[in-house]
Image (cartoon, rainbow, N blue to C red):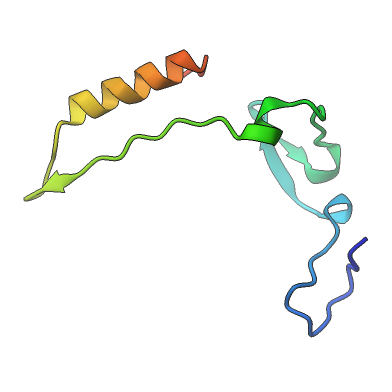
Amino acid sequence: MASTTATNNPTTAPAFDVMEGTIWMNGELKAWADTKIHILTHGLHYGSCVFEGNRAYNGKIFKLHEHSERLLRSAEILGFTIP
């Protein structure tokens, strides 16, 4: 287990089980120590996400509607709810 004591070794980091602070989880901020996920959680192993890049030419976004529709379609396929 990693030490929580500061050292001159820049690769030493605090152990994750003693971290302080909060994490956004399931729509609310929770204490770091109180956040648990199941070992078979899909996101832990695969990191599901959708991404769509946009370009702008001369200050105008190129094909914004098409990119936005593709992003929403991709999210729907993965079962994501887009607010």
